[in-house]
Image 1: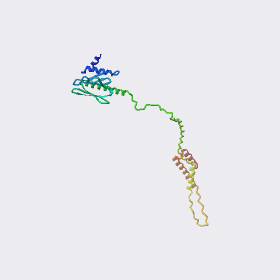
Image 2: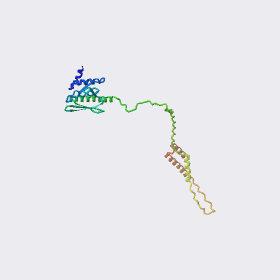
Image 3: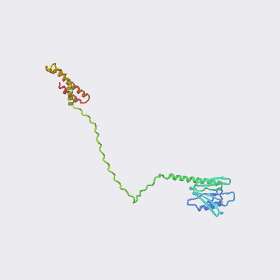
Image 4: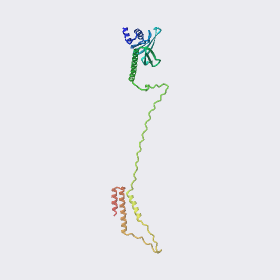
Length: 273
């Protein structure tokens, strides 16, 4: 069963005895669910009984170096999340493989056969790409809540004084709006006062200034004023009635009196004829 496990790691020219020795050491360091995927061995031009090696698992990279004639072994172990990249350079006698971590110095193993170096490069690149995809999927599946602080109930210490809540002030009564005062129209003068004013104007127009006649002698009596004839008096009355009718017509045309008032006063004036 153990030989079957070793056979899949010696398909690219690896030394079976060295692979068996390294495989046994790595098995003791595996975690639950972890398995070995590939083992690459150093192959120098001269005799190399204890070569350096690079072992890949599904979780980590193991760089192994034998010291003290194989009595001691130095391991450099890196999880995949600590690996930044891998580089290799093909030379005359094999390839130089360099593992580049995010922190610390680069680790280089030379004289790795070219076939094994290419296989290491391909497997490590695939592992790093899968790890990056898993990180991206985790970011997409994680809901983003922003940078809002978590809600916490306020804690009031006993020393702090809690101010009583002031009652709400009652709303002020709304003052009733004052009614808008409309402009008042001037009262129209009554018809009686208008006719009285017209009579006064007519009488003032009738009175003519009396011419002073110088007496011829101091003994002769002053001549008596001429008595108006009935025809003249009647003409004056006709003129007064005509003036009243014209005034009524003027007031009606100016819409200062209504038609009913005009007809009533007109009838009164005509009744004086």
